Image (cartoon, rainbow, N blue to C red; front, top):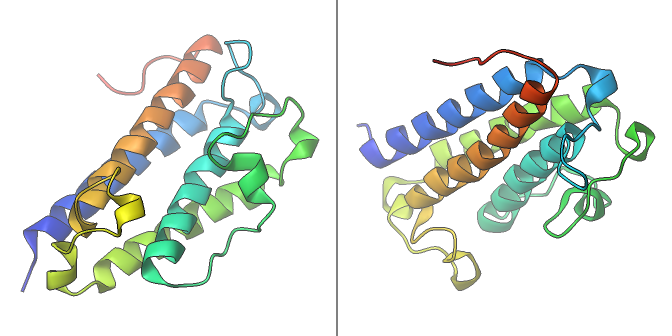
Length: 165
């Protein structure tokens, strides 16, 4: 039997990821640390931050082992600052592979949750993001969409035309 909360949540996660990947296509590897705004987020930081967020939420709420290296919290975690040099980061292929892997793991975890768990309140420390596990999917998609917009601004500054509309 299907669960409309899960289906909707997975749909918004997929929608947000399509935007992220589309905007990321516009940024060549030699521009991954470019920001059109001094001190602004660049694509390497954004990719790492989205990846780390997926991995941390899945591991902290699902009880599984985190897969991102511990050092990534300093590079990509909340409050971290983008570094200007590509060599300060994992390689672009490694980071992009982790972006995909972390989302696959997150989606797999959401798919594995019993229906009753989706309506269950999140632990106290996570209530700022959503009231329950089902709502968390929309919050994750919103977070990614915010950062996908930043990727779009970078692509626009690089002269890339709009992707949608």
